[in-house]
Image (cartoon, rainbow, N blue to C red; front, side):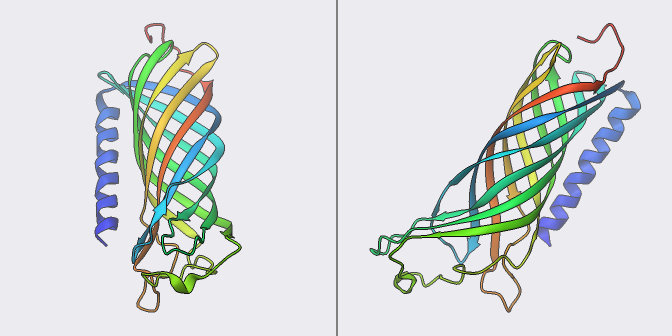
Length: 238
């Protein structure tokens, strides 16, 4: 409940800021679409705890952005993406068995982010900050288990994750990131770093479930190319 309340308040603050900008800012009507790809490093926030290392995998998808306003020096817009991502976790097993375990969780994700930028709009560099909700849909998964397998030796006794499909196919949380954008006559190239904090649990967190929390925690480095579909026709835009 605390996480949900915090999320609602954050989104209300963002909406209020954009509304205020819309009242006094310089109007823009810039729509861009393109491709995005990068590398994802994921861990699961389990309770009870499970020792892990960061699990890495490539990601790719499509992206769109609409710039609607310039408020003083701040360029305001909204970014929407649809991306395919392999999340999951890689356990750090230290019980003397030399067991290894890695779990793939394949998701279709949709971040919807408020984006603010400072710098050049047409040619040159711009610094970017973005934040907003992200939704995900679980598609499929796979377990990678070592040939010699003895989960009964785990010192903490946490073995309920093995052989268990996610109870919840729908994932949701908050994403935020920083980046640099280089704008050229042939498009926009964005280099971004992003963090995703999952609010939804993949396993049942009710009294009947074993895990009190089982949510994705993601770091992402990505490169995006956007080309303009609509563009504000003003000679004084730099």
